[in-house]
Image 1 (tube, each protein chain N blue to C red):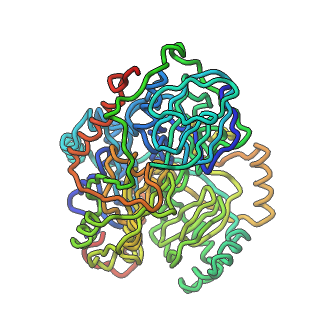
Image 2: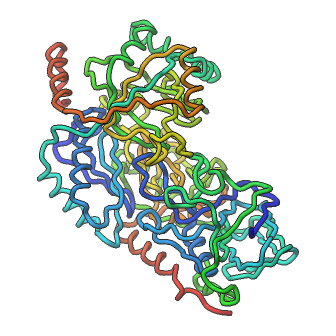
Image 3: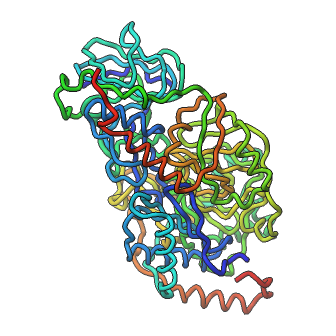
Amino acid sequence: MTFYREAVYRPLGDLYLTVEFGDELNLLLNFRVIALDTALRATAIPGVTETIPTNRSLGIVYDPFVITRERLVSQLKEIEQRMGEIKELPSRHITIPIWYNDSWSQECAKAHGAPNNLEYMAEINHTSVGDVIRAHAATEWWVSAVGFQPACYQALPLDPAFSVSAPKYPRPRKWTPERILCQAGKLTSFYPVRSPGGYQLLGRTPIELYDPKQQNRVFRDGPVLPRVSDRHTYVPIDEATYWQIRRQYEAGAYEYQIREGSYRLQDYLDKLAVHNRHRVPQAPGSV
Amino acid sequence: MVFEVLDGGPQSTIQDVGRPGYLATGMPPSGAADRFALGVGNLLVGNDPGERYLVGRRPGSAGLEVLLSGLKLRVLAETVIAITGANLTAMLDDSPLPMWQTVRVRPGNTVAFRRPRAGARAYIAVAGGIDVPAFASSRATNVRAFVGGIDGRAIKKGDVITTLAPGRALGHLEGRRLRDSLVPRFDGRWRVRVVLGPQDDLFLEESIGTFLSYGWRLSPTSDRMGCRFVGPKLDFKPRPAYLVEQAGADPSNIVDDTIPVGGIQVPSGLEPIVLHVDGPSLGGYAKIATVISADLGQVGQMRPGEIANFEAVSTNEAVEALRKLEDSISEASLVRS
């Protein structure tokens, strides 16, 4: 069972608990997590201080001097029961320029004794580097979780036909340059700052998604740009364009391409239905 | 201007109780690794000790967290300080600086930490609290996220540290100390209480037993982000095949979920890592247990090579332990000598 019949409540010490809906990477699970998060925020249970959406579960921080764990769990179960289907979620669309197969990614792979990551992905997916890039840039990506470190995020493809898969490194890298876009399984992620990691390196963006100095006005409300339920489109750029945008960014002249809006979950379900009609049925138990 | 930094030591950072409220952006709360020690220090010098870790809304006054030995400060203005936490052989010029009590310091004095004797992190609380710009309502430094403290980094030689105006006249602060019965004894054997879960059900029962009975040695690869423990391998139950694709090929892989502060992940069943105040909020390794919030400071005070025993308690016991710890950070715990 990858999609639990009933949510599982797990304790995480004395200040957190987690409501877990399943144990797979599936947008439908993430929509349920976001639905519970939205309903919980609307209810504002006294003692709940933070919520942390992940792909498949909602982390909840609470003050045990204000509300006991038992009482919180019973209130959450009530909310779960009465929350209706969410049809539409507020969702910004952000366009992010990427120099795919950039020189830093290539150098980083080499320094860790790994093959060129895009060539490797092309090989195991029986396709070409060009097609891997085209497929990655063709789908919109849904930000399903933000975490690990500030502005690091995970995103799932909104096109169910997206089929390029990437294994994690067998041994994690000691370092990855900052602003690198990466992929493992069908999950896209991002290294906002230089850090260790094991995802395959796709490319680098000239713009910051994390700015602790909050210089650009998109960081007015906080240093972290990505939010759960954002949609991303990655636009392939070449080296010259990378540097042109980077110089613009550094001069404070870069205009982030952000569109406020919403996303109808039915759009995804429709695409999923079409996709499922055109492929071999999955094993029972999966959704 | 109260102090000039003559030597920053291996890592001295400005900390308060921390920066809750941003976990969903991936920003860890940071804050003092030993909340009790900084809280008592702040109380002694008449500062706000702040509200509870992670769920409080007031981060309290900022002090210095000093890792091991090496930090050296020159006093530039008369003030009252209190040294708490680890015994790192704090010296005022050539005399030992008494701990867990207020001390008046004067321009020209030097405060230095010579040699770690017990515990890993000492705190310097100073009347008024350290004055640096707050970031997201806290002054706590996170060197990996480049926020808080001075330019988001550890302090270094040449830095000048200033304080806010003290809440009380310095004369009123003299002679205050923590009751002897409340002064922690760091003897190098650590009992760390945990609540099992969230993924204890993925481990073999024998391995849970091993985890709770073995004396785990702290590895030198430990910091404010995570403390790694060396000991026997822990094993996992067989798992369904779909998890290989969904979570990863290693039996310790899970589909990423929330890591609490204090969460203990065990990558590949080797070397459990207690994620601490600067730790990640999201990750893909099974977590066997969570250190209770009252005992996070114990882990923060361990030195590499020292031994911890993990003891399972219930969530309710963990809450009671937290109540006891927080109640002790109060004026009633102080006496005048």
